[in-house]
Length: 220
Image (cartoon, rainbow, N blue to C red; front, side, top):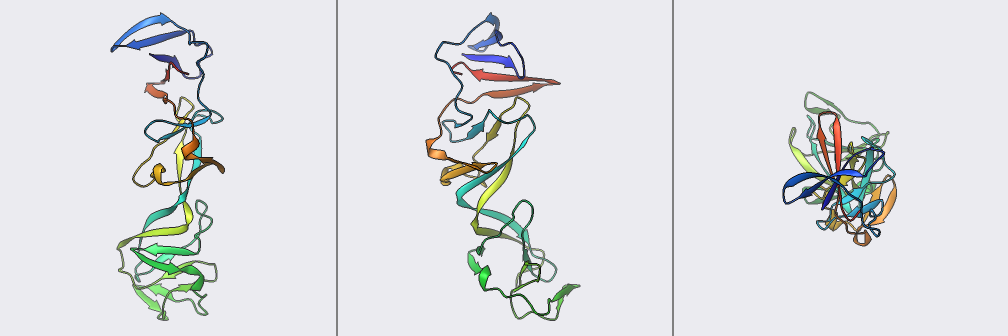
């Protein structure tokens, strides 16, 4: 049985019972030993859920330790791939891989005279990859306008997850973020070992106009 209750409701006695595809109004209570899973748990498919300690519409910063971060970067007008830090990625690590070729960033020197890209031409012509005084890496020799797959070997795969209107976040395993290949998951900086997370049935969240309804497993 699935207990249905309004998210943020103060009273949970009245609920709709879903059985055999037929809805009926019922007064129900959970068994004495029923209890929700820990704040962070996973389902049988390997997806991870956060249902406590978070607020609706909040963005969670998720990192997959043991799995490098990958992104597609388009080469600039001079055939350069620019690598630098940002608010979402404060470190680029020491090693990257571009289409199967490993590049050691620690061996790229700061250019004494930084080449300037104008109308698809560098002035002066760089002899190879270089680093700017601000720490940005410019990797040359690529095809202008073409996108390349870049793997940041030392940076955990990271992304954002949004808490829904019912007050829980579903962190789904996808092709870009396969949870099964990561040893640990970090959520807002706190690490969890994925294999040791409690396995439980997840809730469902449905929105009908301005009304948000949370469908909670009877085991909760």
